[in-house]
Image (cartoon, rainbow, N blue to C red; front, side):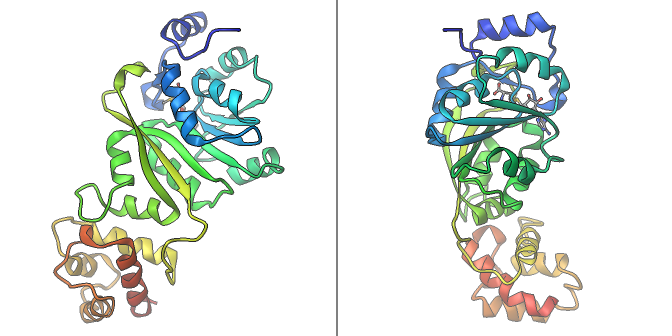
Length: 292
Ligand code: SAM
């Protein structure tokens, strides 16, 4: 048996062998704790027949643990310098494929059709680069990939916003966007000490399980998301003030907005952070005819 990649000693050996220097701009904080990695993979509930998609394999710490439990792993890595390293560290795992690409520019649907055509169960599992966590997650969700869910490490503060409930200070348009597509849970809080180099912020592992059906029915998804973002534009303002200042011609259409609020049963003095996802759906459906 060879040694796991995710130990401080082996990680240092690999970095030294290749003279690798971390690029902060690419969010390179590698995991050096096999125990944490195993717990992350546990939360993905993979079986022998599962496929796994990883974003940012680094030197292969998480990829290796995924390769042991999934049938096939496909990983997107942006940093060309890591390709020869991954070829070396992951050589014992023939079920891994690395794609050299910025995941934000990649055609993930096409990759899934090619690599996972016969798979019934595919999970995304990643220790995400923190500088692009939200764009990556929103891309994966908005593209409606045929995946079961996503288990990923991120900055704790972003995780708190994603899984936040109405009435909390973390709750906002990101909570609603993610919870529209998934059931969101924080499953682990992770200390800085398990990374090399250590990040400046605390981390959390979030599990997102895709809904079969969205939890609410909306007339127009893009408009629904526009209304939720508008409602949080200035957190201290009332929902009426935010909507009149943010929606197109909102000031002239103030009376229509008031009518829609009343129709949706939302008092105009409330703040966006108190509205549930159901109330936002009712409100955007009531507003829709006045703006189209
Ligand atoms: N999975 C490894 C681990 O846990 O040790 C590395 C995780 S590190 C936090 C993030 C990784 O994502 C780095 O390898 C970085 O080069 C890569 N990365 C950053 N931006 C990316 C992007 N847009 N597309 C694909 N990979 C990216």
